[in-house]
Image 1 (cartoon, one colour):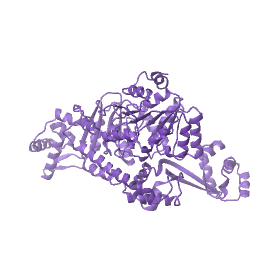
Image 2 (cartoon, one colour; image 1 turned 120 degrees about the vertical axis):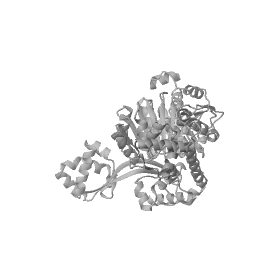
Image 3 (tube, rainbow, N blue to C red; image 1 turned 180 degrees about the horizontal axis):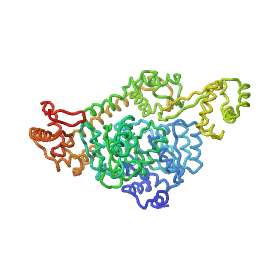
Image 4 (tube, rainbow, N blue to C red; image 1 turned 180 degrees about the vertical axis):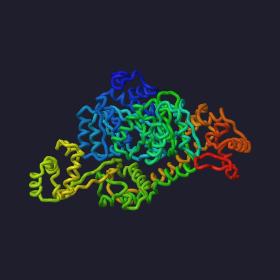
Length: 631
């Protein structure tokens, strides 16, 4: 089939978006390709379509485990055979998938760059008929990228394993000029065709507001929402608090964050996609891989960690090409919090050593051992045991993940362990007299032979299936047996899983990575500084600031961001004139900042300066409902 026939057959579209056709044509002409396509541009089709036009397996390398799984699920739903090598898989499970890629008809194999370094994987790739190598999130290869992962530097060696000439496509959404050059150099792309579309969001009006009353600023912004909206926040509590606040004021909103049960997240997403929920208040992972065309407004209630993240997140609105708006609200406390939240909590090398030492001690890993060992654990219990700051410890583990020392996966689950505490003879007698437990316990005893000797983790889904009972009924029966002192049942909540990728060698493991650890923290600081500079620059078009940051030489103002509109629609007045106008207005009645700006048509920055001066002069005061009145 031709690329267009593949597109129509599997996806139901008649034509490609620009520049998908250019990228696909270049790949099918056996060229290496480096494509810079902003969020919402349909990057995945740029390798999926040409791979489906060829015989063989397409190997897709990505650091985003959840997104890989989503893409695999989406391909399988279209009857396209795809697999992903996830962390925590047994040797046999990995072997089966690799066999299917070699001898079966698997079309796409998704895996992380760390997986590519495993000997089993590399040996099996030699036997595969590979038709294309696709590298997603390619900016991760650069230490100046916003998600640097050293394992990406090893991808270049994979091409030596292929039994025939295979071209490569590297994709990412955004990259500064330095990162763009490093992607090409470090991934060993051979005379690549570079295809890049502007990061400029020509249909998105970017607005930045400094305000002490962020909730009401956002409420006012969302009042005329005609379509869907997303509000990005930086912690789970804010998702629920703000969803409740906006819902109580007539804007139906729901919270979404990684700590919610998977089924609940699916339900929230389904309702939002079906227009039953107007706004989702979410942490920053929301929206990744979701192509909803009519998102009209995106709000950053808390500051983004970088302009790279910001550009991708605002790119989730206006995907239908129609007018959309992105609002970022902040005050001085947010700027202080930005550094504290994204820079100060990045551990130094000595702190990384300590976290690595303790995580090994937590699981009893001996020196020289631990490679490929997998564990589930409760992160907060780990932090409590060693008195770690949770943010610092989590960032330390994430950094060890990026540095390929270990593989970390968020994996909320309840683990059930049981041990039979009566003899086998007594158990048989008990079951003969209590038939309601017979089938369940018979299955447990058959599957888990050591259950009389030690605590054994059991698979509730499996036991429920074999016993023809619901999972809930199994839990009830186990609890009853626990109360009757027939078994000991322990339900432990786990929220992370970890796979050790290298043997434990204490400081010798971390010392060679000290340079990368230092560079990572410096990079985070520079990104935070760029965000602050963006917020504070009230003289240059917002869209221009972003495009220039990514190395584009565009000089045309967008004409609709908060800076451009200020030049068009507001007047700059002397601070004394602003003070006089404010006092006259407040003689009529108390007013908020927004009301004063609307009535007086004064530039907001000038208005705030005047209000601060009047507060200092004790001519006005702020009420407990955030309005101003005369003293």
